[in-house]
Image 1: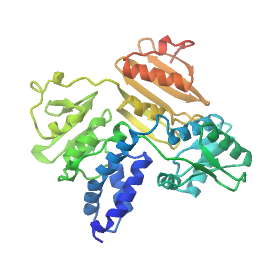
Image 2 (image 1 turned 90 degrees about the horizontal axis):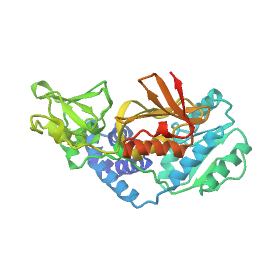
Image 3 (image 1 turned 180 degrees about the vertical axis):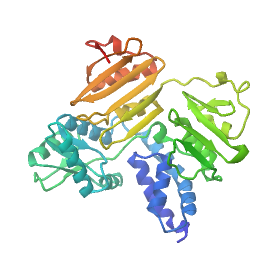
Image 4 (image 1 turned 120 degrees about the vertical axis):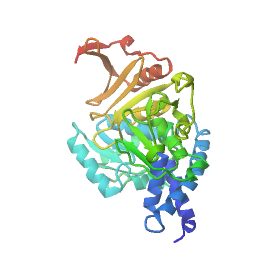
Length: 390
């Protein structure tokens, strides 16, 4: 089949995945090729996906600028967080289908401390909701759990329909509106259609074939700490790493995070490659997190701006050992879930202690906001903190 004949189907897939708000642009391109697998040559499918994806991202970002401060998707996340805190294991966009989701979430319930039940919606549910359909929630094990779920959803202002039967899934009528921030909002312009270049990440990172310009827009600004990328073959190849808000090539040239194409192009940047010509970014933190046992994870520090960090924080499962760490020259904020409560602390390397307290979500959000915007670690000054040795 000709790639041109697949354009409408590819566009529908891309639009739904962009709206779903979970995967990066490069991952969506790869997913599009896998979705259309064996129906055209892979190289042609990659070209088609790269051609179509910029318009879908641009339209999504334009639309989200008009959304209210709090969307139905935000309300849904808040309701799920409240349920999770009440020991009803609540997971969004969880597993591929109903059967896999029930099996996986029951494992979490059995592994959890005093879990009373569960609720989730799976990937196919999310895809249907993105297209304007209702969002169906699976739950268990009893009608009483269903009643608590309905009450939590309605408390957030969501419209719910359910007949009270434990065999009937709960129908949430909402307008799906999941915002994209930072790396999840990055997309290439027309340069994505340029010739692809050899790319090798160390440690290895999965990525679709892409042009140097697409690499500079999608990957280089968010290179994890300790990761390098080698672009090209032979004598003309260049290796790049990130340090804070700067990108540094193996020949000593320096550029801002979003100017990587200048390093790839071999341009002479700054005064002899000096970093002084790169303006300092504000509001940037180095973030690592882990949502256990089956959620999103970030194993090495990536630069993240405040809206993206807060989005991750609000989705951390409660009765787990999930955690988030945000670092700045001004200090480190570590957030952990302990027995359903939120522990907030900062390490003190000088005397091998940590200063912290159990906190509410809004207090954790304020501390992260201060670290990102005021470049100040506010934890030691919080009321009720204690200091304990490691």
